[in-house]
Image: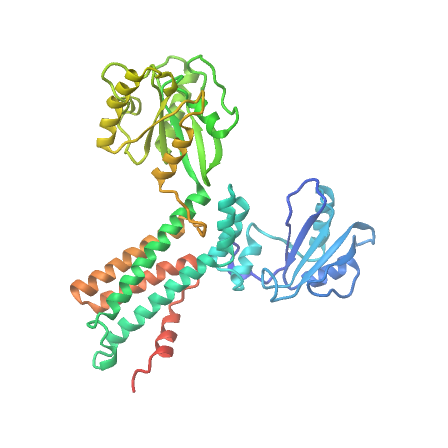
Length: 473
């Protein structure tokens, strides 16, 4: 979200269309700023509006002709989304009417809002913190019901509350440490040696890890995972994409090399968003177009979160070769077990029990020893697809609790840095008894954690120290 310069917030009245452009029953234009109320009065010819009460009005051009008619809602500062005077003009949906009305609003003194500027003003006026502001976009962009629900919980402040509780604990820890450093002769502040700080620090470390685990689930809810299907031609990659998508997205034929380019589809399975990419079959070819497709396939393979090696159990494994050897051959090297899931397609054709037992004994032993996993499926019958989805969720550790909260990469980064600084503080405290270094690590931990909500201030600690302790008696 591109934010405007903070110094400009509140100096101008901004306006923008708040509903998607196109045909619709209602179209909304939102205004925020000191002139919003006056603009509404000039636009409608009315002299007053009651806060939070809808008023039916006609909207007029400068020459008195009617642009449209609809409702006006007035939200008086500071009791509005942005904390400023906010006006909502609810007219008829439609590109022409909405643009005519917006142009008239600009004539009366409003400026076009930049991307995210309404949310920025809400943040600037302490109506939202950074997490809540981000959750607005996350709720709009949610690709699943679970992601939308988690975003709304973050918007309501649940994630911020967890972070703020941890910040309070860190401030309290810093308070004790710095008191022990600055007033070593005071009997009631000898905290470095009595175990209080260590106990509290370890409790905070454990709680950070819990929030981090929840945030990881929230990030997967928000972003999903990128899954690339790769293998030899006619192994069943496109058929598997169609099975997972629940529709015929990829062309499937018996002709090798049918897929010439990457094909992407996003699906939600068991609450997890999968960004699936089907790729051209990997083989040596003189066909110029197919070679380009294979190059794109290798680029997608390198960027995948999870790589599905799809192979035909009736054809792609011969003699004493194994799926892992096939993977090494196709990819140039064997991918890490955490990135690779092997899919044995057409398993329904292994209808001879002895043949099936021999196949499993040959593949499972080696893979189990090396930490790899294989799932038997049939894209023809759908057998094993549920097992595949379960295996994908397990591989990425996706098991979101019902109270999961949406999270972003920057939140995870800040939490990991916070955990690292707390680990440093613990070492300095327990091993080296170095109070100054403990204090510095705690300061860095608090600063990192405060980045999440954007509410940290170095001056906060001073007020906490003098507000909580009676030192200098």
